Length: 208
Image 1 (cartoon, rainbow, N blue to C red):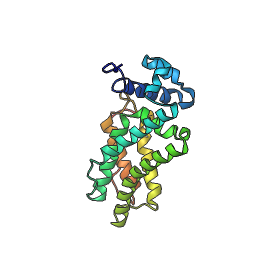
Image 2 (cartoon, rainbow, N blue to C red; image 1 turned 90 degrees about the horizontal axis):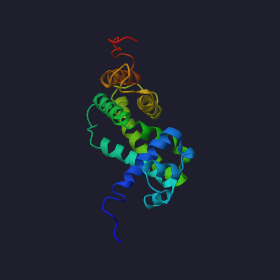
Image 3 (cartoon, rainbow, N blue to C red; image 1 turned 135 degrees about the vertical axis):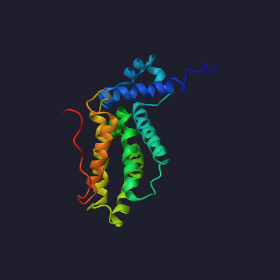
Image 4 (cartoon, one colour; image 1 turned 180 degrees about the horizontal axis):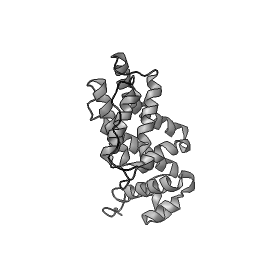
């Protein structure tokens, strides 16, 4: 019998991934069952196996898709200019891309331990490719005498950790809007790679 149009992977598959992402981000991978995911989607538990062979594969797919979308988006950037400009472009991109994907970011960092060694290696390779883009900018800036960083690998990890940390506390209805937060973070990024001769962060025009 032919499949009913719109009833399988083209519609339900994305719903399964969206439900799994929400539940895993909220409760943790170990605590979430396939039955819970099925209930959230509105299908029988057995029907989930039309879209994924097991929960491990579902977790891996969530992380893989997130990283592949990240790499596709960052590939569209021009990072070939002066290192100062390239660093600012990268930082702006990282903030914007990740703020809209807080659940995916949380899972990508907190659930790595639950991947099989093979799946872990694949995600780790994608992450290394992304980190290398930033480290290359830092190396160029250091070689040109524009950045002062004792260790570019360490600086890369510190910068990414700082920028990604936004997703754990930012709220659209918070005290600072995105533009103000981005401005402050870009200043801190420049200060982290400088010799101290950079602009200071101007006092905020909003109450603390």
